[in-house]
Image (cartoon, rainbow, N blue to C red):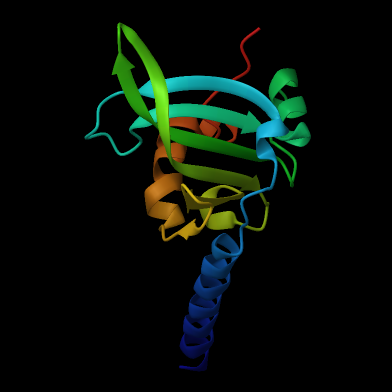
Amino acid sequence: MKVLVILLSLTVLGGAVYGKMHKKAKLPKNFRFWTHTKSMVIPDKSHGLYGFHNIYANKKAYKTMIRSKKPYPNGAKFVVSFYDVVKKDGTTNQGKKLMDALMVKDSSAKDTGGWIFAAFDDKGAPKPINPKKDCFQCHADQAKNNDYVFHKYIK
């Protein structure tokens, strides 16, 4: 009985720590001065990641990405800025900002492959998410062999 109570307590405590870890993530200031590594568009408004994406990597993430050396080190960060998709006069451009998503490598985030996930609205305020369900599930399904990072460096 004591073992069951201890295990249950550790599970609850671990979940609380895990949740706090993702909630304490802050959107880095001046991330747009980091290396821009990719742009892409998901034009389908019904898709969960709809928008024009600009992806930025800090120095630790960028160095690892260009060397194709995995895993990423603790402190590697990616920010994805999502913008509305605007089609006008035969061109497709980014419109107003929708949100930013953050990935921070932290090996203590065991339930999410060693990454902290967070989301922020167009003004930089935290958005409530379930990091495991809303983020990590797709990263685990589609990018496990690349340390859960979707894109790779293209020369």
